[in-house]
Length: 449
Image (cartoon, rainbow, N blue to C red; front, side, top):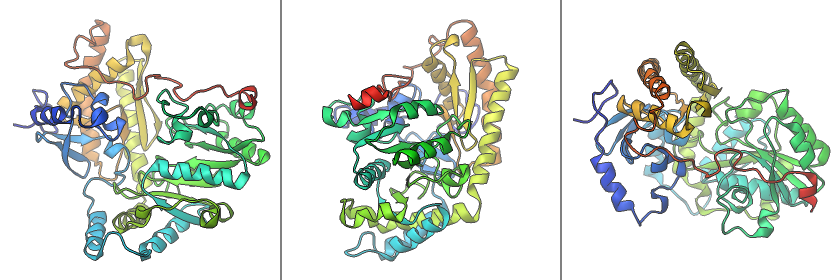
């Protein structure tokens, strides 16, 4: 019998997952289309590898095992799986058509809605993936300023201009690599030292897990303004989640351009670039950013329904409340157990569980916790990504599972047997450099050499 969301006596059977994994071997590079979803992010031999269906905050794998999901599609499921209002909107549009030979009315209606709820969204363009719109934003900034160099902070996708700063940069021409550099979050001096008269834009995630300190985002804006550099907010994670209007609304700092994707259509593939009209209008004649599927109507229908639901039901407040309960609850249990080497931190709606290396290999500690949570019906890869479907019962059960599992981790650490008690291979880092993976020299000398 398949496992349920309960204190199961056995780990889930994953026979069908493993069979699919074997079929994918040599067929799909890396076995996955998204590294964060791939088998390397889960304990190999214990965790499921393929999911079959989802409803609300729960998912079922191909072997029928049920889990509370705290990954939520790696972010897009802001409302939850098979959310009725969104799915109904998709069904209605499906009966009318998917992609058309001329623009569809939803292109206008969704753009008007975005302009209404997102600060500074004077003009709007659609695409399909997050890296589409971050790349378009960089191109716009270069066209608008007549400059070429980019300063970034965070993760911005797979395209050449960004991925060149990671250790997965083979195939990127050196001339391209030499145009992008990084600065450190909450370190305004690192930006001041790096920016110069050739910098077209600064692009950053407004917040990941570390909150901005000392008015950091406003200082970034001020430095950009003083240098004639455009500020781009990559709001894949913050948009429609921190607040209806995203990080701009939440922090009160306006960017020149904003990029959205994950939370805006509850799982349907769409991305959004918005910003000041004088910049965005360059898309009309000066730069080329067009795509056949940008106006695909099922995703636009989903986006309209999702944004309206987020706005009308104050979804960000709910996400914050449920996420705050999880984060504080985890930390309370860890303090009670005197486990000073682990804590949950981040924004209320999305927090990260971290482990201090003083207690052992952090990836092995994470793997042990994941292994025991999976046994209890919780699909977890280190984060609490909360959706509107995560109920009070889900949160209470998750905290009860932590009360069972954290003492087991404490005992394994105390006896130095964490690796021994893993029933499979531990998780892997997405990037081989596990810290500061996107750091290149960022001094003014390096930029002008």
